[in-house]
Length: 361
Image (tube, rainbow, N blue to C red):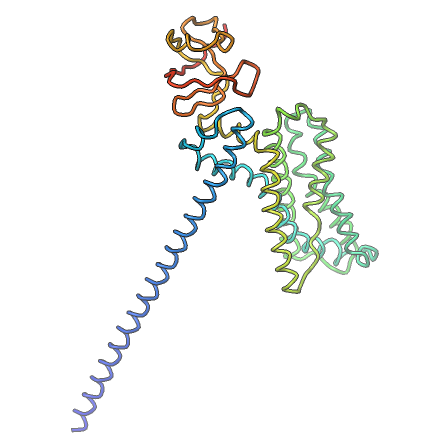
């Protein structure tokens, strides 16, 4: 009897365990489904907000484009360019704002390592007692790399700015640690390589931002003095690379994050206003809204509707003419006289056929 009772007890325990496992599996499956539903709901909300923001920003940028180039806003707002125009403009402006933010974030990490390697473990007592001033002086030396662009007569010299901050870091590290009680460890060598990589990356980001801004504004600023460019780059790099003070308070760290987010938003909108025309012009060419000086197949019926001062004949091919198209929106053409940016004529239904301009012989 005792054996039978034991068997029944074991059978009941097994059934209970199976039931508990099924319940747990059901709970896990339910939790997974709920988690997936939450992520899907979050994705849908983010997509809606992103689309709405792109429409609003695209409407604003198209309004700026219409005012600057003399194009009817109603034609632009009713076109399919609204969302893509806003997205591409926002990405272009964010590219200018985000690169400097990356430099600031990198500086927060490598400044702590720089302090540890170049000041805390240095044999120079003055550097230790005035560590903030020492970090600022080091930052001045690290910011001298733009002046090496003066030597860029040879194409290989353009790579020199990448090596200057790393070389300065190694020089100060060796001089400070010479005859010091702190010996070089494997961790110190890894941190040194990290700082060299970080400074090189910051130089590359700074150069990319500068070239990007210059590409946008090259029609406005023309040829820039090399010395002026070097001073501007050095000043910008110094400000972005200001050493981060070691902060332990959570409130201060949260405040710094809020300030960083505000800087990103402010830089985004500040750049949106002065660069809106230049960025809009570049984006409009990419998406086919602004055609500028383009060649078209000669069509007598269409050309009779266009005044002769808007038409330029192509000597290489009598069947091709050139027009200065400010905007083309659903077969509505905004034309400008050659040499001008703002449209002075609106024609619909021309049905022009664009072709490649023949090369000059």
